[in-house]
Amino acid sequence: MIIGQVRLTERHTMQDFAHPMRWLVDECHPEAEIIRVVLDNLDPHKPASLVETFPPAEARRILKKLEFHYMPKHGSWLNMAEIERCSWYTSPGAFTPDDGYAYPLS
Image (cartoon, rainbow, N blue to C red):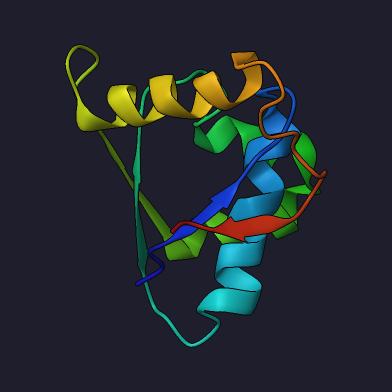
């Protein structure tokens, strides 16, 4: 189980979702048969993001190991986490994302 890592990007694109999913499958849990991923309903958080980003065989290989579970659209704890994460960008002198790195939560 991966707890305590956040990957920040400036946008929410399909590629911003697809590359961390490949990292999860290939580097974090290469021995796992199935990886259950809990997500909010943001548009890029769909299997189509992997299909659009990677060649078909690569997307199928990654998707074969992922099982997506989506939170309710209204009132989920992930919505609250998203609000908090967005505040990092809007607070004066706050955190600036460093492209492509994972940061431990404290």
